[in-house]
Image 1 (cartoon, helix red, strand yellow):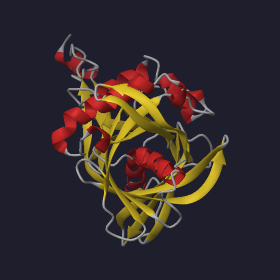
Image 2: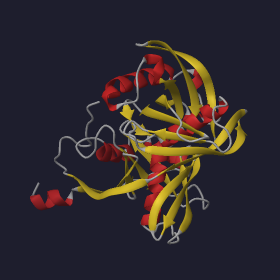
Image 3: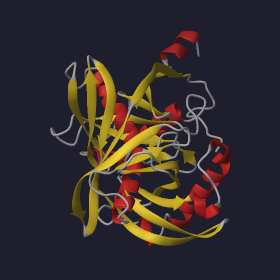
Length: 346
């Protein structure tokens, strides 16, 4: 193979990169492969097969172009004219059903790039189809600057409470809720831990144990759509003293997929926590959850409506955060590179 022919066979992928609360989000408008399906949910099922879309995911997510905690998404057409676009969320282990931090990043990206027109000062709804349903990123601008983004999630509700789980720390009781994805939740005071970076290894290990202990059980079954079943992650949380009337403060480490630690407070996880707190009577109308992450980034969340889904009392959550652009990248794949599509070491 000559150098010219080798250059001609190079694969090229362009991305726009953001972070929301410290958690990366790599936006790919053209993955260069088919994403078949009539809806985003159908496209996710096709992408989950070991085919071209999954290969591109691994190229852009795994080392040496990514890392074990990388996150991103492929932009797709919407399900219908009611949304601006769709997205297939992905991480090191596959394609997820929902992503709040990614939705916040996509709202900021859509307004910044002009994909969705916005006033110099005002509020713009960016409507996005994701595998778990239709969500909205409400983008607030002032004099052309994006100041914040509200993530309006899908209806969220509790699936089970006080579920016993056997772990290396003994038997623990966890709650299980749906917030676009299904999460187990544990107050880390039960195991004598705190949500701090020095406990990262212990938190990841515990989160993985809880996820895999429950993943195939009845509590991980979505009541309406089996494609949304399975424990997506474990939210390990720590209660903090309130500083203002009408607020609940908590710090969390969300361990999702197989051992990924969310640097943000986790958008869909925050929606799940809102549902749990509401069901327990701890959070009411007009009150706010102030949710911080292991790196002290912050989301706030409130209940904007109450409804019922498949017989479950549900809440409609609004999660507010901010995303920042970190760069634009062009990645290439050499046809002679033996390490394509990449690798992860966790």
